Figure 1 (cartoon, helix red, strand yellow):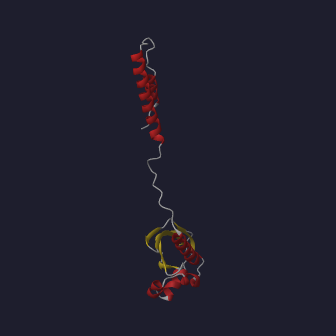
Figure 2: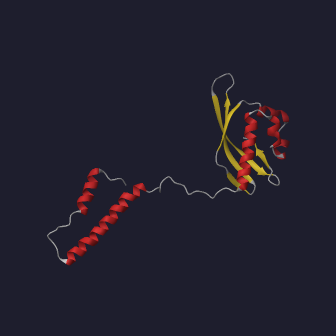
Figure 3: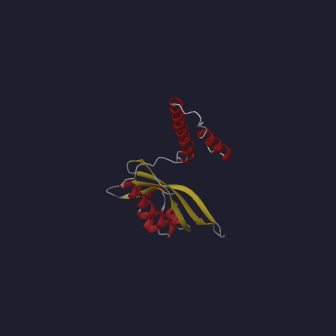
Amino acid sequence: MVLGWNSWLGVRKFLLEVNPDILNMTTIRHYSSALVLRLAVLAICVSLPLSPVVGKSIPSAAPGAGYAHALAAADRFLQAWQSSDVEGGMVLLSNDVKSKLSSDTLEQYFSQTGLAYEITRGKELSAGRYDFPVVLVTNIPGTKCVHRRFSSILVVRTGNNDWAIDKLP
């Protein structure tokens, strides 16, 4: 609730309408308690628009070491994609992905002109499985235009601090 200038003048008038001609104790107690109440209402009206209630999310728990390792693996894989490093990217793939895709398909995947990528905050799907939303930025062949493809990359723990890509973006 935001008050306009006329509303603020009305609040000021409301707060200052104590009549100085009435000086008995009952009236003074009444007006002092009324003044305290009015000041409390004014403080609430002023502080509500300033409070950060709307649009703020509760911060989630700090990610653990597994999150950092999974993020690093996703970043290394996307760096290999960006630099067209087939061998560097193949090392980071899980056995499941390697068995599903042919080597020609993987070479074609890494031969794309990867200009850039973005990784946003991931989430833990289960113990040792993280999903990171990504954006892959590539050239459109024959033009000066770029294409942004929104996807996600799934990273899984394969052993003692070993992480692998289980779903290509």
